[in-house]
Length: 271
Image (cartoon, rainbow, N blue to C red; front, side):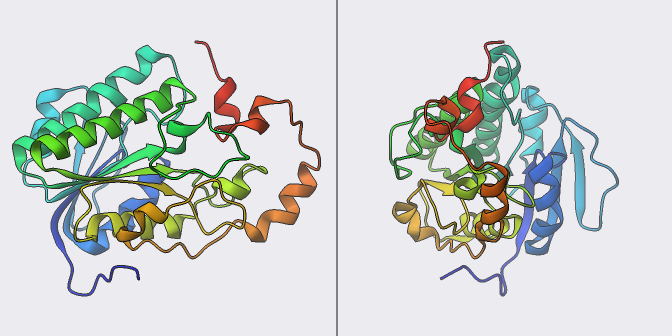
């Protein structure tokens, strides 16, 4: 059963990475469940809507991030580099910056974080396998490695400081699935919203890892160990199946892109 928003309001939520692709999707939707939405990004954020606070911030700025967390009830942490790059590019935002967010939460007394992890934490599992959020990480990139670090950081801050986190191993969240891989990894924007709301509102989460994926017919990820979140996806990649299979009628079963769940990420680099 999905959480209900009836009577539920956070006084202040923080959304990092608000200028990114998924940040722009969630920004107007999260405003509906809080009194004030504080939005942050290193990039331009545009004009503040009613009930918004805008803070342009580099996550590598520790003092700035510590101040950013003050007065925040919960965080949706999307900020960082969202694709594969050289390790030196990944490090400041995805690793150092995520540490700053958690340390800021500890100092500010913020008790819950929704962390945008990635399916690329486990990208070197095969597409012929079905895995749960409890499997050991097998990152496919420096990007995936940075998200595995973020999940470990979340576990540490829960065990040591009691800060709860839901780590979302987001699949492929776009207006429509892209390529045949997307038939398995697709996450609709509406299901993304349902997932984030469930992660924010489930009564007890500890540190929970869950794959962000819609109710697709072909799935690599079994989310039953995270069923206590109450996330029930409603959408599916199925309406696009015929089109995507016709566009790619043949699969090269010797190509790592077709073998591994990480798809094209497994062959990116070196940089």
